[in-house]
Length: 296
Image 1 (tube, rainbow, N blue to C red):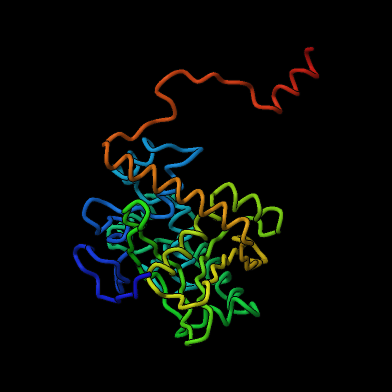
Image 2 (image 1 turned 60 degrees about the horizontal axis):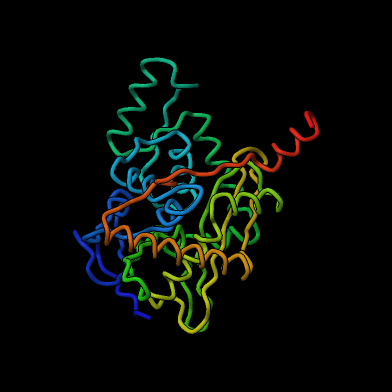
């Protein structure tokens, strides 16, 4: 375990540290010479993706997407960190003037939002503040948003990084709480179970806990990692989730395998696709069942 060293944003990272005031662009641009692995990158190395797709996406950053911009705007409003919002007082982006205003906002480093989107984001933040647990959890001054951390995995030597949405300040005997805020369409328990598995959020939970422990943030008490899920449509319900130990154990196993793959790919310079030979492919079980019922 390394004691966390908090520094201002440097040009490069060569020792384990926490960095204040690092922009999201610099974080995703990766300040570690030779490269480091994030939680989202680790998940991209594993099925249903593959190392070749991970490498291509790292080398070919994609332009901003509207869904991502809405998520960034929600984070800014709830957590108070990130680019400022620019309200485009138009109903949509169908006109030339609206498109121009949107593009100018992006060029200036702002997050463009149509008027109704801005009102939606404000309503979501209001609901968060009214929530009996999430409201106090995200109270300004009680934590730090979007602080970047870097550490080296002792088993593989792979450099790892994370950027928790929110790290709650803790006293000497308090449990460290890290929170990730996510917007979604359904926050019912059954829907969230599927969401967590489909997006590998149990691996993210284990990754962030590992980072906090490696950097000495948690003390002698295991850190807590919470997801704050919120609906993007009225009534903007909020559902706080802490994953159980079996989920985190599976997530940690995924992370271990991803770091092993990353280390091997870095060492060999080979980032394989799904299969360089021939895959013997069956129909999906539901397809076999349907064809059996309909045709056999």
